Image (tube, rainbow, N blue to C red; front, side, top):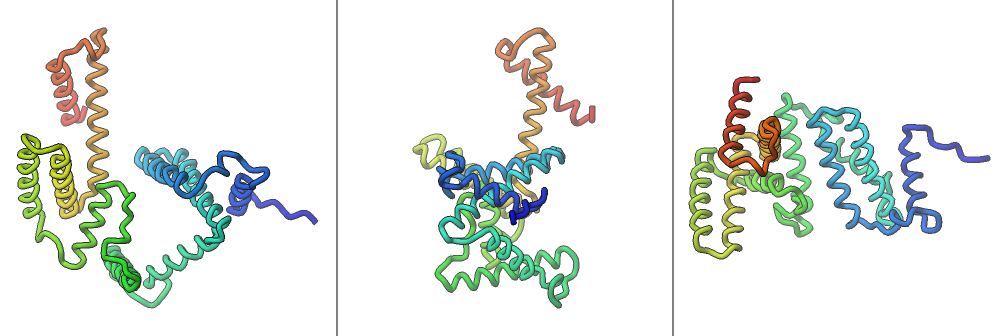
Length: 271
């Protein structure tokens, strides 16, 4: 009796595809060469592509990108299974247990007041989990992944430190710190070695991330918006120069700045 093939949409089908791709005798040579380290960059890239599809509200693309991200989970789980570390089912069970544990107001008898109450309870449960881990020799900040985007990691580091009271009282104090760091950067840029300039620039960025946190802003989102605005306005410069039958290298800085200001004016006027 032949085994029934998994139905379309069944995760078992994807797991079987990955097993075949990693088969030592009949699998794909490229897939067989991979390990956790070589696949990790693809995992990060796919997560960003999911975020990009969400930002542009391209939902057909989101479906495809979520599939690509799911493949990354399956790929890592398959490699782990081959080394007898864990299997895909263990990944699923671990996240199920975590979600149940962190939602006692849904799966238990706890009560919370609104979304803010949920957030506070979630953080308290995470704090308790970290406290259990700390008994195994980990520091307060040790489990914050070093591979996170730098601004995102800065926010997480600052939030974690704030949990134990190590924080600025308010945004005004952070603004004062930004002024101080800006001055130190300017002084370093004038006479100090490049490594010191890099350090001071990093201090300024860290302070800016702290200000975003106090203002309850996402610095990554704010910078993405600034990037998009720059692309939009620079595109207006290109269009303006091309409308004159010229190319960008032919235009002066003054001409480009004038077109930039015009694009800015139009945006503010809602045109």
